[in-house]
Image (cartoon, rainbow over all chains, first blue to last red):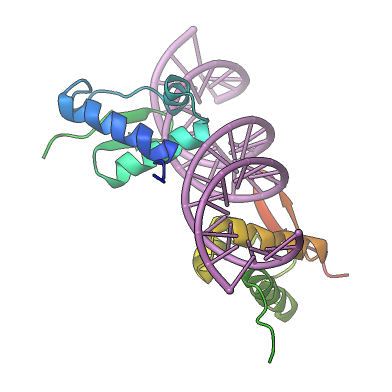
Length: 74
Length: 74
DNA sequence: CTGCATTTGTACGTATGTATA
DNA sequence: ATATACATACGTACAAATGCA
């Protein structure tokens, strides 16, 4: 039986695709973690985990109190 | 042959020893459940179970969103 | 300067599903 | 069947940084 990918990875992968397609442009601000949670119908904690995943992939950067932004393409 | 103790008890016992030795002083904050998991190479859920064990032993107390702390010596 | 709202970041507590022994 | 263990997920709570009225 196929093991389903976890929500946080599904969300991270989807956002990564949007970044790579240009839908989210370099320098652009992403929706807040709470909004991402709503958009994908997951808890904020799960949405945050997805964001942390993208940060680990060096696709985004963020600052406390501001938001998360798409990193410059390398 | 001795039945091997479960991980959660091994972790709890080790932390209890650190509390009794003074390495973790009364009032001091313990590492987070996640950190304990990493320190002992167990899952967070197992680390949390160890912490619950210590709570049952009245050695620690904790507050959601803050952390766990060493109880005052009786 | 002083609150207040927004947002990231951290952390607990609980629950579920799967796997294993 | 029962206990252990891991990974995931949700919800809640609070701290910290930032910006703005």
